[in-house]
Image (cartoon, rainbow, N blue to C red; front, side):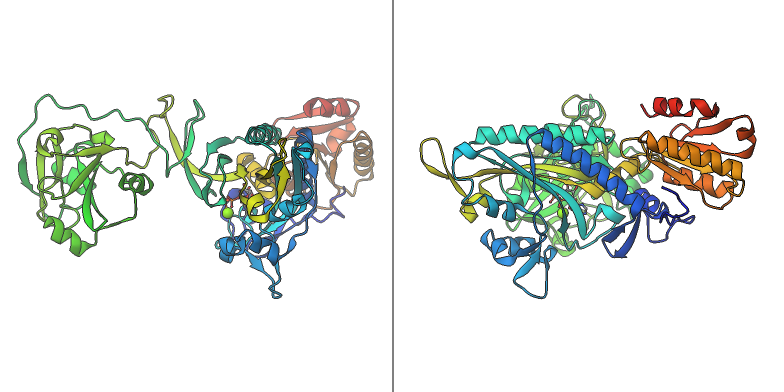
Length: 561
Ligand code: ATP
Ligand code: MG
């Protein structure tokens, strides 16, 4: 492809509506343009990457016996009514003015529709059906470029099995294929066992990558691969070692001291000596939760412990229940259930509020002074804490979901009446799984993980082109002749070459080449050419060297091996 005729509108400046690295680079490299919030057009260079990712996905899906479909995006609404999902999707579902149709946000219903009355016998099972197709979701906050779009490309696959054991097999095949796909795309990812949420079914895993653009917060252990959403993540506790001697309780005047940090500064103590109190109302009764220092209460864990709805006590309730305002509350003299986080277990010599404004107590011994205290894991896990599996250090960060595999069970087949006859001649609903990958997200996440201050860094697998050929001073006939020759011979050998034959300054061309990030740059200039040489630059390492023209093809073959 010749850049003088190819539409690659690169930008020097960072577009001001873009924050996330991949979004900035995709705009700057002329790969995408926004049409409307969450709706992106892919331009030629960007679309080449989408096609490469799609091809890898196809190869691996075909490798596990998947059969490629192409379902309509425009769906009769009545099929979606069969599973009650018009209501379940709510505002996320795009309706068109004609209310008889919806734009499909996923395709469980349509695949089940095609399976119904067709997959009639166990003899026709298993089946794996997939497609790479546009989805529409009216996302409330489209952002981070193509990472959260309102229209996006998904590889969605569906398995149909006769037994739950066979579903396990289909699920395992997808798990394997997904790992191959993400490995081939050179993505650093990890797997989180997720709750199946509102979708129904049993068992699911999410393939995630660390990213500032992520909307999920996860705890991850690089050592053993433990990964969990912080809502459910646990960590090991070293436990506060009991001091040998328990002090007596002592009341200390702490005027205007409200937070743990203020208390520590005022008394010159460490936050690990402080027990922080939070009061919640559960079934009209107050519950005091004690946390060590600045640890935060994980409300998902608390909900599990209390076994139902709860809410933080209002300021006026706090005063009535404890006699003090938030900031001066503590376990001593508190009338009600008290649960402490495991980090506080059986500790002594703690500082806490005195249930009297502007006063704190020292010398609290939870064993001696707080009868009936309960302990449970109630913390939000923090970076640096111990992995619950291998005790190494956990990291907490935001992450993006790249893909999702999911045992649907019979949710859709039951509600839509997709039945088959089993070996014993009995009628049963088909046992299903669903498996998704966001194609644009794979591309954006790759860019998130492979870039430097100059631009993107493509590996040969996903690179839009393997070689960027740069002719300096295109007005010189010898240069253009030599560059054309290289362009044709490399293209004939099957390399994808982007030929910068534009009339422009060398610096401008170098910057564009680094921004676009093809693995190899070949630079044809006057001085080197006189010695029958060109300059080669490897984008990833920045390494540059001169090469005899005759050596070029072999060297490129070697670099791209
Ligand atoms: P998220 O929690 O990020 O909204 P999801 O749970 O809604 O994802 P699924 O319904 O499981 O996602 O869809 C399968 C895959 O489709 C996801 O793993 C993701 O890669 C991709 N995907 C989902 N929503 C979007 C979107 N709005 N824009 C781009 N890709 C998306
Ligand atoms: Mg979603």
